[in-house]
Length: 162
Image (cartoon, rainbow, N blue to C red; front, side):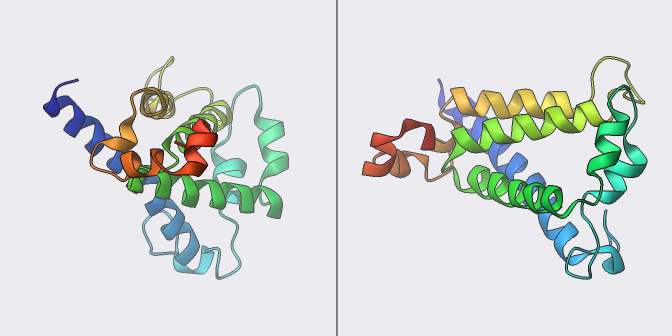
């Protein structure tokens, strides 16, 4: 892969990492972007309630409504946003972060399976495909700490951690 492609792949990975980490921070603190301060997780709000209760539609709507506001779902969602975001930003654990992020995007797509702007494709699918690309293209090694991380004994024994 040529250097320009590596740089673009690294920038895409960092950008996706920031998207996940920003969602975590905004939902945690209620910075007023997607989450109002009074609905932040620290103020006692549920980071999953709004999306799963009001945005969910399609054939799985009842399943997602049942999960809305569940503390276990909230914790899993927030930990996912934080860890996926950090993995992608730093370039370490990109394989697990990419697979986990793609799974999260699939669930979010299934929760709103009838996209409003395009009947077949939405941003969750594109994000999921990008995340899968990161897992197969050694994206953590470009503009990240992935090369050093891959040389550690832990990652040498467990390549899924790369």
